[in-house]
Length: 204
Image (cartoon, rainbow, N blue to C red; front, side, top):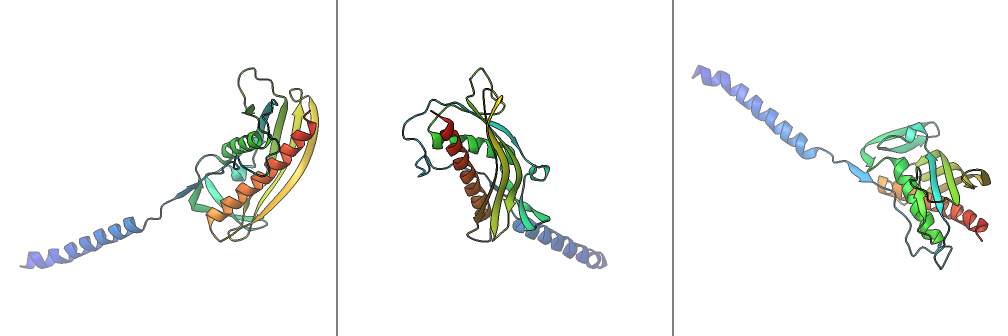
């Protein structure tokens, strides 16, 4: 009888421990993964109505080191950002950004001849687009931002056609990361349209 009384507190403690573990497992927050996406092929910003023969090379695209991480950033102030533990990019942001920019230019200018740096083979690149990002993040429930310097080259980088600094801002619809990423996506669309219009101005 005494042995059972001594063991009973240990049994109760063990049961309580198992219950806590079960509760923790049930309440573990799942990570959410996000991607940037291309504009619609029916976009009203489409600049051409018939297929084009121009060849475009996108890249290099340079990102600041603070963005080279899987976590999505929430900008708290001008000098402070917060990493989200459970809201992440599904792939490196630089790669996602480069691919979507290339697809947007393809849609806007109606050309299938778009390559992402480093391009392979001997495909002649008529226009090369480079982008250096200085700011690409946003505030939960506030604005998202894209600030960058970009340039368009011709003749395999020997001729500079244009060099420009652009800033874009998009208001968020609600205070969540889905709205934040949507705003970032819209800013990328705006940059794509600006670059596409510039390329079009040099095309015959």
